[in-house]
Length: 139
Image (cartoon, rainbow, N blue to C red; front, side):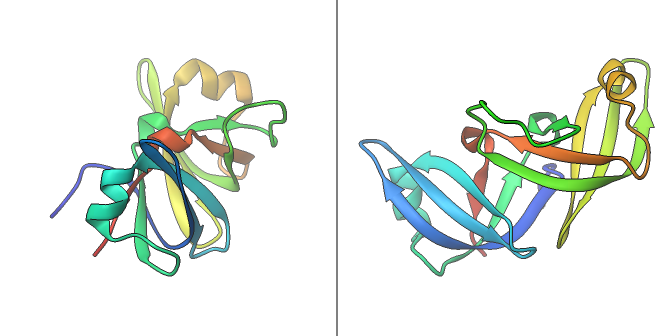
């Protein structure tokens, strides 16, 4: 199956913390970073997820925000540092490629945000992703 989701990062499930309807699934990415995906208990069961399961973390590029430094006092737990490798700006929006350890992420943000943050190739950034926007896939 091919997907239009640009951000597909391989990892391994570290822990599954079930709740009433949803579960928090902690995943260690190939680069060593950890992220959390909030998915339904049904999905955990259907995918057979448990510690040690190989997965791919999927995040639409429109759901990746960028900051110029780590952000404190924020509910977004998934914060991955990286370096901008490319900025392609259009009339209103821009696609920003970010090299992180072991992978590349793409963020689609406004052209104004690129200008306000001063993003160019070589800029240090932190990719921010809400756990509810991280999907998981198995092979």
